[in-house]
Amino acid sequence: MRKLMNKAQMEMVKVMVKGRVILVGNSGEGMVDSAVKILISIVIGALLLAGLYALFGDVILFSSLRNHDRDCYA
Figure 1 (cartoon, helix red, strand yellow):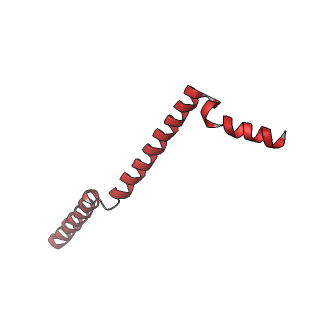
Figure 2 (spheres, one colour):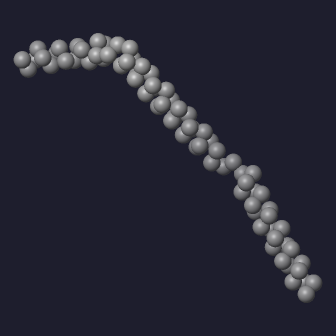
Figure 3 (cartoon, helix red, strand yellow):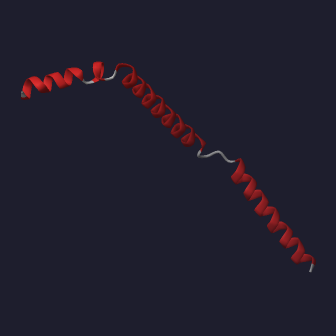
């Protein structure tokens, strides 16, 4: 009976050590940080572009392209 209790206790300690190693490990942390940086830069770029559209409308971004199309196909 004593051997069985010792064996069960050792198995529980092994499980606890494995869990602690998994929780302490930071093997994929660099990828998560990179993904968050990329998403933040995309969101900031989209907000900047939306601000330019709201501020200037079609004056800067596509007016020359539309005039070029009108001249070519008119």
